[in-house]
Image (cartoon, rainbow, N blue to C red; front, top):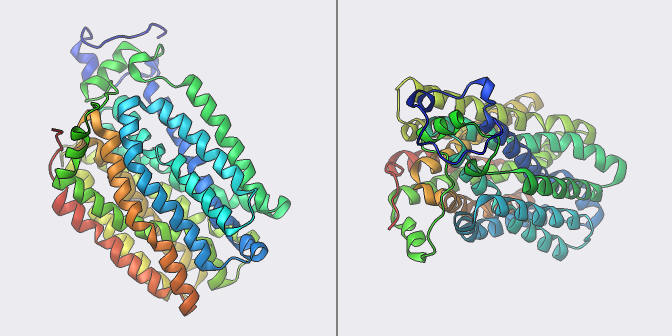
Length: 441
C-alpha cells in the first residue's frame, strides 16, 4: 500500500475488471471526501448572502432588487470566469487551481463582512465569483482521473450534493452566528474555514499517478474504466476553441442555463420567500430553509445511484442514462416551481421546495457527470466550465429579474412560474442536442 505506483500495464486483467477490495482501501473514495468538504465550504460561502440578507436590508437599507443584484453580479462574473478557469485547469492541473481559487474566494468572503456599502458588496461578490470559478470544473477533472466512467455519475451526484448540504447547513449554523454576533460574523467565520481547508488540500492531495498510497490493483481498476490519468490540454487556442463547434456542447450550454435560472432563484430568495410569505421567525427560518436543501442533496445522490444501476444492468449507456434522468427531473422541477406560489400552507410550500430542489440538484449533478462522458480526457475541465458558463451567464439575470418583479408586484408568482417553465426546457436541450462524444481539433 505504501509503494508508489507508476503504471498499470503489468497488472492482471482480473484486477482491472473488478473493484479494488477493502484491503486495498479504495483510496478513490477518500478523494471524494475532499471534494465533498470543499463543495460544502464553497456553498456555505455562496449562501451566506441569502442568510444575511434580512439583516443587511435592515442595517444597510438595501432593497430586494439590490439583494438580487448582488446575486446577479456573482453569477455573471462566475459565468465569465468559467472560460479562462476551465482552460487554466486543463493546462496547468487541478490541484493548484483548486487550492488557489479557494484561498481567493475565502478572502473575498471574509471581506464581505468588513465592507458596508452596496458598491463594496458588489466588488466582494465579484471577487468571490472569480475565486469560486475553478471549484466545480476541478472537481469534474479530479473525478475523471480518480474514477472509472461507470462510477462517475454516482460519484458526481455525491460531491455535487455538497452544493445542497452547504445551503442546508448554512441556515442552521449561520443564523445562530448572526443572532449571537451579527451578520458580519457569518462571512468572517466562513472565510477563515475556507483558507484552512485550502492549505490542507494543497499539502495533502495527489493525483493518481503521484499518490504513494494508491495500490496497483485500484489503479488498474480505475485505468481500465477510463481514468487514472490527469491529462493536459495543448497550449494551442485552436484546440480549445474547437469545442464550441460541437452540437453537444451547445446543448449542454443551453440546457444548463435553463436549470440554473431556477436554481439561482432558490439560492438567493428561498429564505426571503419564507419570511415574506409566512412571516416566520429567524429561529424557525434556520430549520425551514434547511429542509429543501437536504432534499436536494438526497435527491441528487439517489438519482446518481439510479443512473449507475442503469449502466451496471445494461439498460443504457452512461451518456444516455444521464440524459434520461435529466429529462425526468427537469419535468419534475418545472411542476414543483409552477405549483409553489399557489400554496398557502407552510408545510406544502416547504414540501414543494424540497421536491423542486431535489429535481434541480439531480439535473445539475447529472450534467456535471455528463461532461466527463462527452468531453475528451484532456478537456474535461474545459467542457465542464463551458457548460457552467452557459448556465450562469444566462441564469445570472434571474435573481435581479425576480427581485424587480417582487418589488414591483409584491408577489413571487410570476418569478416562480416563469422559472419553472424555463427549467422544464432543460429536458429539450439535453435530450435532443447532447448525443455525441466531443473530439478536439
